[in-house]
Picture 1 (cartoon, one colour):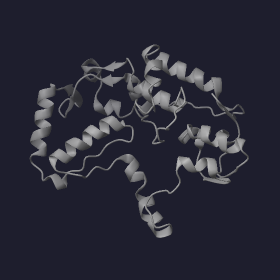
Picture 2 (spheres, rainbow, N blue to C red; picture 1 turned 180 degrees about the horizontal axis):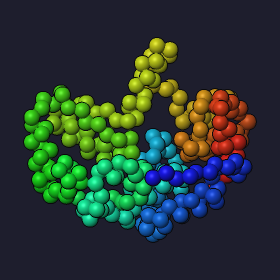
Picture 3 (cartoon, rainbow, N blue to C red; picture 1 turned 90 degrees about the horizontal axis):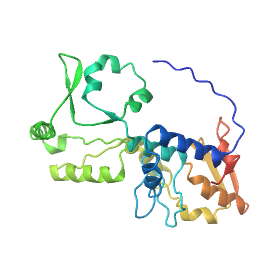
Picture 4 (tube, rainbow, N blue to C red; picture 1 turned 90 degrees about the vertical axis):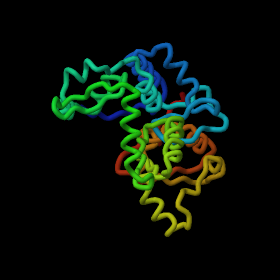
Length: 258
């Protein structure tokens, strides 16, 4: 399923009413025009929930709208009104679905019940919750806990990941890699050899005190748009921002708040 994509130069700012319109469009498309804004009002707040689109920290003093366009889209996909039930899988084989794009599969909606692959029909078939748990438990009892890896997606929420790791530890395993962890394996090896610690040493609290910031291949407007607020404050007080990137990062050139 191929789709022609035309990329044109963009001379407008990052953020602003363009982002607000995009957020409204995704909430309408996912059928959440009322529930969506109510949910987003709690996103990245100390008493709310953390966004699943990136690992940017919850601020101690959050703004009224503490999310970016990408984060709003990720949340809209999570709370979508679209449902993917047994009828969908009865009409499509796995061989057929493997040819669909990730976007097309996402647009089908959320699963309504556990599914299990049937090799004879090449289709997923519904399974009762009690049967699914029983089958998973039977399989886990056949292995030693230290031999099991409990992998999680980087798109899993902090709350879901917390419950998942509790389950893994009760089972007797602490093998809990996730996609973010694997992305930073090289960092955990290289940083101790260069600065002596396996993690970055910069904190958000350092931003108001820095005189110069360097960005190496980081597209802030795409990868961590919420940082644009802190960068705006850095520039307003006269600090310099130097970027090394073959792409012109629009977020470092023009940013409209909100």
